Length: 262
Image (cartoon, rainbow, N blue to C red; front, side, top):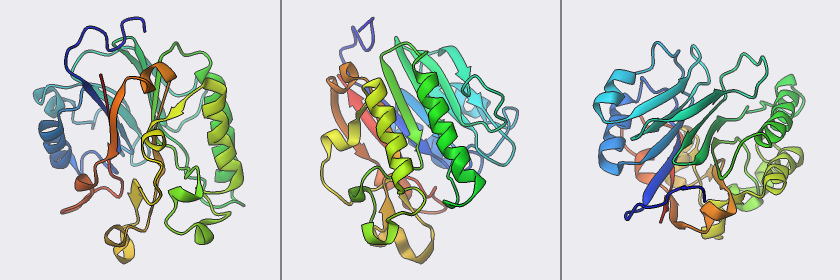
């Protein structure tokens, strides 16, 4: 595996989390780093520029950061206990939206992404989303493996990933073209949906609307994913959604998704 995860007696933990404003939830982030101690944490929806990103606070917590910010919207980062190398931002095009960051960590190509939402099926944002997925598919072919592709994909791949399949049928995040784009991404690059591989049961979600008590009713969607090369999937010992991080005062509307590897 080209040295990936090799030679370490203890397992390692990699996490993805749409934090929905890193500055608004900095205390939560620092607490998460202290209590969960992930080796790598990919963040989405920073909602701040590179200059506004709390790099010094994270450095004091023991983490290096590769950041690709944007004022008020989007923004992605990779935090790591070890220095990251070969950092890349976006898909090699002139897209002004900060949606993807990649770096190499222990021989693994870590890709953290925040896919477009798509708004509604009739909107230009929906076409942008499908075009973005097509670009992502092409771009991934240029990335060395093994791959760890994670983040907020804004796609619920199956009916089991929605709290009410009839309600969500044909809607943005669960429409057939979006699901096909997600499936093609996995198939073309041989990626494993790590959570679904370990948890075939339905009603396991990563996002819940703030309104109407959706979290407490478990009316959510599974739209945050960990897609990995088969050699990484074979070394995965556990994967789960950290629901505790969605509780309490002023949480993100997403919960972190984590995986441990031997």
